[in-house]
Image 1 (cartoon, rainbow, N blue to C red):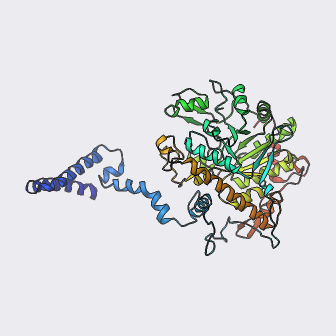
Image 2 (cartoon, rainbow, N blue to C red):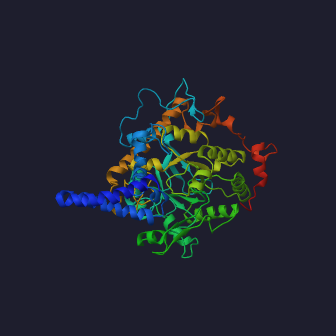
Length: 526
C-alpha cells in the first residue's frame, strides 16, 4: 500500500465522519462533506476499477498530473521557451510572420540571438557592391515545350492544404489573399471546393491518389470530371501528388463520420462512408506511366502546366523517372519537392520523423540531376518546406528552386498560434477545423489582407537579400552562395555535395555518388 493510498483511506475514514458531524452543528460545513464524499467515490473508482497504474497507486491526486500535462504546451510556449528554441517554428519566426502580416515593424534590436557558430548554421556572403532587383523579377513563367497555356507565378505561393483539413473560412481567406497579392493557391488533394473558387484567386489543383473531384465511384480516375474542373479559368496549373513530406508513401482514411454531404459533393464520394486515399496511384505504376498520365492531364486541361509533387526518398526511383523522360521525351512542366520537415498534414510519428529527404538537400539533388541530363531548361522546380523568411526563399532558390511554397506560415498569417491541435478538430483559432462555430473565428475580410501582406513583405525581403549578395536577378543565385557551418568551418553546398556539369550523367564521367543509383534506375519500374 503506497503512502498516497494510506492517505486516501485516512481522509475517507476520518474526514467524512468528522465533516458530517460538524455539519450537524454548523450547516455551512455541508459543502465540505460533499467534497469529501466526492473524494471517496473517485478514489474508490481509481483503486478498484481504473485501468491506469498511476491512478491505482495514487488515487485522486494523480489527476493533478493530467491537469499539468494538459496545460504543459502553453506553459512551455509562453513562460519557458526562449525566442529561438521551439519547433517547428520558434517564437522569433512566428513573430516575424505576425508582424509582416500586420505591417508592423519587423526589425531586430540589440543583435541576433542565433548562435552563428553552431553546427548547421546557414548563411550567405554579402557583397560590397549591392544591386537592386527589378520588380518584374518577382515572377517566373511555368510551361514547357508542350504547354499552350503557360502561367506566370510568384516566387512565393500557398502550399497544398485541403478543404476538410482547413475550415471554409480559412480556405476563402487564403484564396482571397492570393487574389489580392497575385500569387497561387494550391488546393491540396481534398478536391477543388467552392471556397477555392469564390474569390477567383489563381489555383494549382492537386490530384492525389484518391482522385478527389475527378473520380469514378470505384476510386479510379474520371477523365471527364477532371476536364470539367481543370478547364475552369482560375485553375492555372495541375499537380499530381506522388508523396508528401509529412507522411511519405502513406495513404489515409477519412472516417465516415466526417464525410458530410458537402465533402461528398466536392470529392465525388459517397456520404457517410469511409474514404480511402491509397499510398499509390491506380492510374500508373511505372515511371513511363506517370509521364503518360502527365501528358493526358495536360491535354485534358487544354494545355495548362502539369507537374508532380514528391518527397525525395530512394534516389534511384527519381532517376527512373528521369530516364523515362529521356526515353519518352515527355517532360513535366514542373516538379514540386516536398521536404521531410513535414507540414500541415497530421502523420504517424515514425513516418514524420524518420522518412524522407530534407528540403534543401532534396532540391539540390533534383536540380543537379536535371542539369546532368540536360533537361533542366524544360522543367521548373518548386520547393516546399518550412518557409518563414526571405532567407528561407533565398536558400531554396540558390540550391535550384524556381519558386517556393509555404503552408504553415500562411496559416500563421491567418492567426494560427502553433497550438499543434490540427488533428483534433479543436483548433483554437478556427483554421484547421470543420466545426462551423470554431471556423467563424477566421474573419475573411481582415485575414486575407494579412496573408497578402505577409507574402508581399517576405518576397520583398528575398529580393533585398539577392541584391545584398550582389545579384540583379534571382536566377543568378547558385549553390555556392549558401554556406553551412561545420566543425571545420563554413562550406558552401557545392563543397558539401557533388555538383554535376551539364550532360554529365549522359557521359562516362558519372561521379561515384550518383553512379550506383543511375545503374539501378529503370524507366520501366520504380
